[in-house]
Length: 220
Image 1: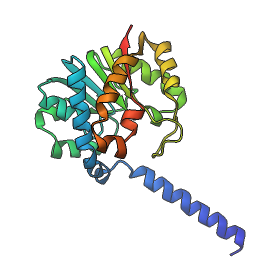
Image 2 (image 1 turned 180 degrees about the vertical axis):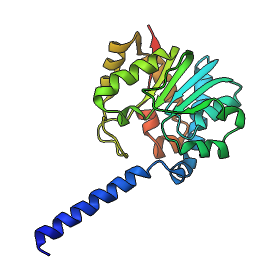
Image 3 (image 1 turned 90 degrees about the horizontal axis):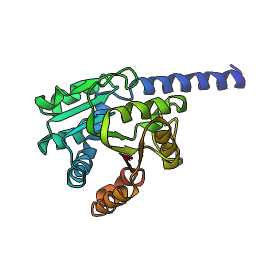
Image 4 (image 1 turned 90 degrees about the vertical axis):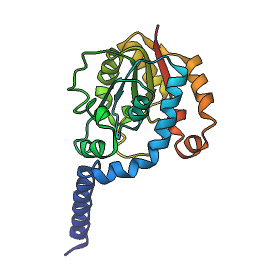
């Protein structure tokens, strides 16, 4: 086998390996590995309750469901979560209260229609996984599901991660929201909540993107 053939074979094996990793990325083990995020999401949920008047919340890309779990514990009953991974259903059934699991659905964000509107729509670290051509549609669907607030974070350029295809600065998303809706950044409320996050060293040092990427939008 020639050097060129060796190189081609190695490249083909690498491509097949990448395909396998991509196919199994969001399996049960993946969600189990995210147990470390539970205290962080609980803290964020506490901030939401403390700084926003909420009676209902929808979480777009809810993942393990930890945020809604904490909000449910605060007595917020009108909740909904959407996630695109079929494998997460088994995790929900194992880790979350049955009453909450019934409020969670698996489906493509772009295909799923939400009839109700909520006080708060949450979308954390999802936008960077959406192709730029679909970014406006994502923002449109999120805005249509909220009557008051949108809690938004998305990976910015230079932030590491898996399957990030559209890392953008906050200004990019600010423009997208302005084009698709009447929601505008509430910088005063965003600053207020970011200041409150500083007391949590685990969040600020271990998972800084939850604070660095935060922008709270409200209707103007």
